[in-house]
Image 1 (tube, rainbow, N blue to C red):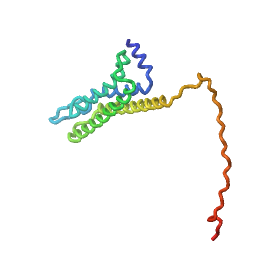
Image 2: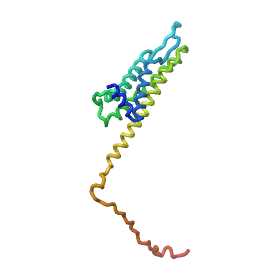
Image 3: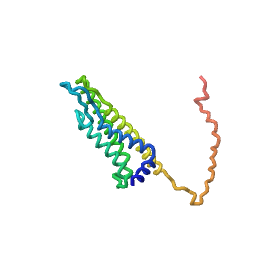
Image 4: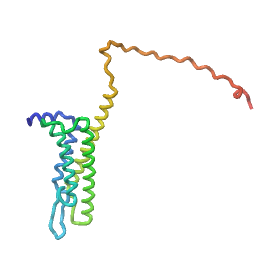
Length: 192
């Protein structure tokens, strides 16, 4: 079963793999340190995305990106489709854009806190979260546009005429008769 799942993952197109990799990076980076340094009283602290002032934002980012990963992992591992294929791309686009906005909001909260407490520093976890969210957002937008393009092509698809024994005949371009000279009017013939 694991071999089948790995084979299915390798069979996906590149955009899908990059989208899921971005979601995975953002899920993992919530556990990494977002802020750290010397707190009031001289103790050294390090906070991940689940702690500090950004705890609720970190939890929400984690849940949103985990849902995007579940949309990928459950069908690959043999489970049911969580969403219909027609709605999957738009849902992923909305969720990843929401996670990106929340991660930027978390960065602004952390920046504000580090400006107030000068010995606190922004750590690499928040940057990885933002990068993962941005990558997954951009590739989910790409997948959404590809889906829309495919829908338009299906809408304007005409059946092939090979089975109908209809031959393509060249269409003769109709030549229009030459234009005649404009009539001479009395206004144009008078000279001043």
